[in-house]
Image (cartoon, rainbow, N blue to C red; front, top):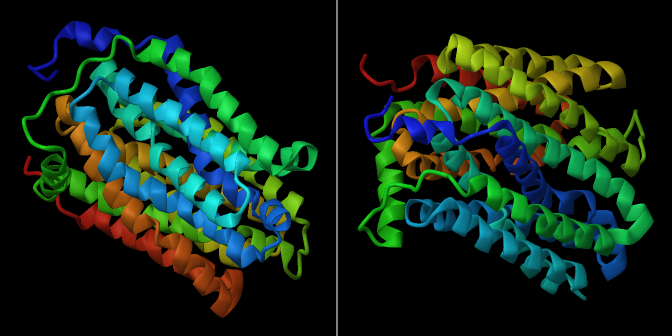
Length: 398
């Protein structure tokens, strides 16, 4: 146990608190990825091409990446409940503005704001680490990471269906309502969160210090670089999923392709089980196992992409392994200094999302050149590189 944290600090996380945090993490994560499932409806409403409307989805992810280094460091200065209250309120307002936007430019700016403040899980996860006992961090992280996955894929699937009932504007408006309704219970769950360790540095100095600290933390650096490659593979596959499923020879409808996200939803439900394995057998050892599963499933895409049932099964294991590895790598990174978990999570998340986000660009480019088979080769290579970094990357001295 860290000497700077009292035993009472580890007795603040009850199951009902974790459930409230998990629900809010899932909802906030879904708001960042739902625009991808609504681009067809948005382009029709604004009478623009799919290429023009795709800027909206890109702006949301860009806002998310920028928000991590700019907003997450506030976790070292203010209580988590205060930060979540402000960001959650702004998120609900930004979603309403997006739903009311009358052109692509206004929608792009509104969705950029959604992404900018939608990184609430990056605030909640470090707070949850400070609220639970060390031997329960793996399970806690896995529950929250699993909730992110459920929100990501469940939100995409529900958005594809609800857009046909209430339109894309009604769908985004419903997201704003969900954020507003679940924010009070989230603040209730965070009310006893251990205050972060303060800092006399300015905000921008704190940002640079967090990144410099990552370079001097070999365990965090190895975990972040490993997960960057894993996320790159994940983004590459899912960025081209609709293109592959709606093209020959499968020729699925857009709605059917969107519902494949339920595979990811099932993987999210299994992720908390990975946390128990992490707690029992160790984060580093189990991360290696998850990476092996990812490597095998990535290679299997090459052979199963034309068989929907087998392809769905492969995507299930690939997605589960991706999120389980995230939980394992995050536990390793944050455990190096639990009382500074907010700073560590800022550095870890920035490295992971900044590097791993390029998978969303590389995947479509690879698909254009060689189809899903080429993407399978690419993600297999990324998975293998992740395994090499896990095995031979920088590590702390025993």
